[in-house]
Image 1 (spheres, protein in one colour):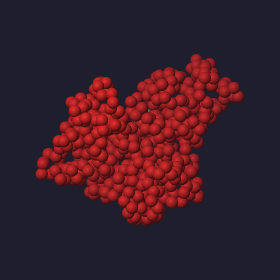
Image 2: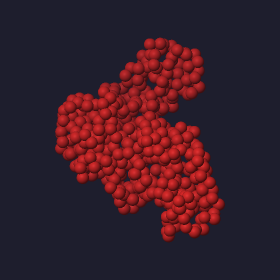
Image 3: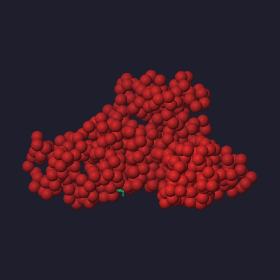
Image 4: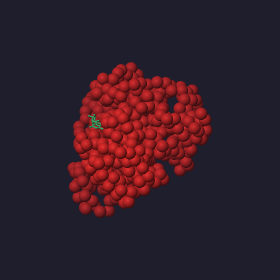
Length: 521
Ligand code: GDP
């Protein structure tokens, strides 16, 4: 295969969802189809802690979860699929957001009974901001859930994205008969070994005699589909690629129903590796000769015997060969890439070759920062900065032992640069406040300060806050700071208000109309 064909065969995506929607379950099924795991229980076993986690971070072992996203790769129908895991729940962190910077499309998983939930909204917004295609899988059709039309409406009303139903459920829960596949023009029967696929005639109706034909669920589905044909959106691949229209698939991950059809259809339409812009607005083509990539995540201490970290690099262009010479654009330093690793769930193996679209992990002894660009040869090139995300949780932090102050500040500086946590300080007193999008970031911080910098820290929660930056900083007066609208500085010395809640923010705005507030992503 030529390098171009190799790159064109890549499909790199993440699954975004609220906890419990079924992300782990569908991931297992997908890996299973790809032959990447023998037993579709492996990923779950990892989640519940039964999987060998010998050299994962201590916290991971204790909790049986993966602290940061890992990468799963498999081959299917001539495609090479890379699934980037986006941890949710207590393990939600900035890394979860940043992983979305490294994918070409996203699969949005929704629980049919719950509809669109808060974490899905947050992750959706990040995908939206990037304008990447979003494919929707509405899960758990084997259970009673919301009406399918209602779910389609929710997509438009809550998320503001238009939808196109690729298939449509016939009944649900105990009366789930199957799905009407508009794209493949067939009906896929639920729990039916024989005649799993029933053909449709030219009018889009069942072409064969079948008991289903007389059921009210079939009639209802046909009515709904008629409505969709008349009043729904048209299938439009350009709008899908622009992230304006989401193809919707109904199914049931647990019973493995509709998952394979979803995978096959998804692979047809999901985009191959996309170009990426540099800092100067130049677009770099994935098939260009020169290897380049950027660091989107740094995972610490996967091997507790060493302090080594793994820097995850999304390859943007060209081909990676072990032993190649690259330049780290930020420092201008050149070096040889010798130690690299690729991930399949927990089994790490050495990779010798990878192309644009793939993710490689590089052993890092402290050289990389989030957002760094590495490039073959010496031509300087810097990819667009990764966005900073507005933290929602805050802690005051001090060293338990004041004699350790130097180590304390060094540790914080490095962890902040690495992107593990965000740094703020109070005015004048310069007390350290850390910000995060997820609680786990604080736990990892505490753990790493102890293990890597030998500093015990005292953490004092100050709760969730609404952080807002200021467009017209010159107009800010320190007297505007109060208990409920605390004025602090970020690590670049910019003013930031930490509001206690929405109400405090509105009250502040009423009193100080001239101050223009904005949030990061
Ligand atoms: P995650 O938190 O998104 O990774 O969700 P999991 O994959 O762990 O699933 C959460 C729960 O929903 C588990 O108990 C699954 O067995 C269950 N589940 C997942 N998919 C389905 C489905 O299609 N139907 C039903 N009835 N349950 C499901």
